[in-house]
Length: 387
Image (cartoon, rainbow, N blue to C red; front, side):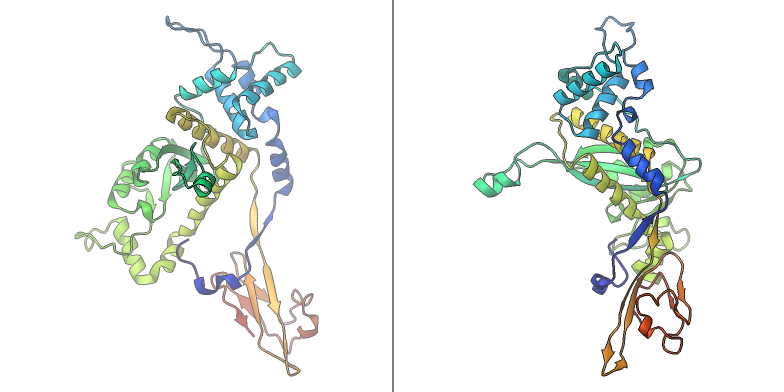
């Protein structure tokens, strides 16, 4: 979030804490991520062999589903191609099934020719609220150590992974991989073309600001709401007085209420969820691409998205914010001096009664009805409340 309340003194505000309500289900989902049955399902084993070709070209031994399952197993457990081959061969031996594992050369070659990979995301019942952003992934080349140690010019290269995430479920609905010289707004159309569900809104950061983005979104539905912060130098169109566009309305709202007020009205804060998705990709899959060819990198990024969606489908935490109160109580010449309470509150106000029974555990010697009045803390303002 570029604009935050109390930005100059946020280091004094305690970090938000969350509590997982469905810990039993989430804990079981975390354990299931390491289960081989999550990646090698009965459907994969039944469709392991490739269908018989009717064309004169050579016959494949393994189906596309088998190659995709092998690549997902590789990324999920961070294995090399040869180790993936050995793991799958041992699984078939333990299962006592008459199947063979594709060798590492076949995996590398077939992965480069995979046309499409199922992302494994479940379509929601109603319209989705889409979040769009991009992140960088390193590719092969000399690292920072070589440049610092020997002064050699490092061959640095990286790709941009563009993601479209459902704000309600956290599932990655669409993804593209481009070079680092490709602009973010140019990938809005390819991302939206991959989505089959109805789109209710599209939220992105200021890098996507511009009428071309609004026009692309309008092609997928005129009633789709676009939430993008306009640039500080943005001006209204000539037709804004009679027929304001969504971008004009954002400019007018910011001029009237400011950036923070606009973020609150449009619920722009939920864009942080896609930052979480990109961080989850780099933490689980990795911050770099292993494949050397462009087609192999495309397939690797797509398989990584499918792995994340399957893990999220296995178990997702249902978290709520916890109340975190840190009270500083001091004496000044034997009298009750000025104190403050820093509170991180949930979505509703928290009211302490006059007897302050919930606060008595920490400061029982100061908690009297004639000293501490009723105290209300609103979630919008995290300023210290003096009493």
